[in-house]
Image (cartoon, rainbow, N blue to C red; front, side, top):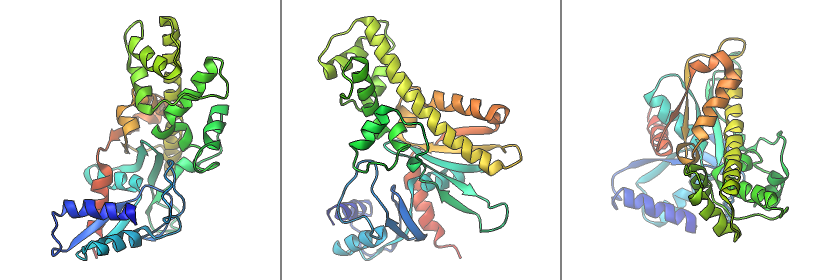
Length: 319
């Protein structure tokens, strides 16, 4: 109740306290859900270390509608709840034809795509893959350690290898191992990881200051350069894994034909702000798709979650 009451309060601010005009509300909900129609999504499980009680197994829009009613906002009608990847895809496709993949690369990581069903078995639809839950990957001991101490051990294994919620933790575990403290970990954030990688000075003084503050040790310029390389490797692995998920979708959609000209829409702080991510993502896609890669453009779709939710709500008015 506390969480959804907060959302209702924010919505009330957005409509400036107008409790008379009818508003259709599109709601982006960025967690694995069982969805039977556009306004009915039942939370399966929290991810990204969220753990608010009383929501798992519940219909999200029902909880939001109850909160709106408690605030006297009967004029705000939740008509659409969609995953944030779907919102990004809708927002980008609204502006650019031939956008078939939408992805979030931020605190969490997930991707959706437009499925044509070439065999005609079903109507075309957007498939939310929940790709962050893919678990058929070669996990390192650092991945296993982070998974073991997470809120949901065994779940979201790919996401725990690539997303902003975990990149700093992965670096902290690998760095501890590098310093001879196997099994330990230093509490780096993805923001700090970005700052370490971004230090372009020869002595890596800025990167060293962050690392030394966490470890309580002092290091030479050569040591700091090595530790920066380690940070870059964590980021590179993340981008390569995400690129592989995109390449898989492109191959699936193309079937036996050559991949058509298309856009991949990405939103999220890791893709937008973490140094090297966009570079390595593009490079890995080029290697995986070879001569077909020229047909694929990756675009940043800022604020896609908001626009996509609004579009989903607007589309409910269509016959």
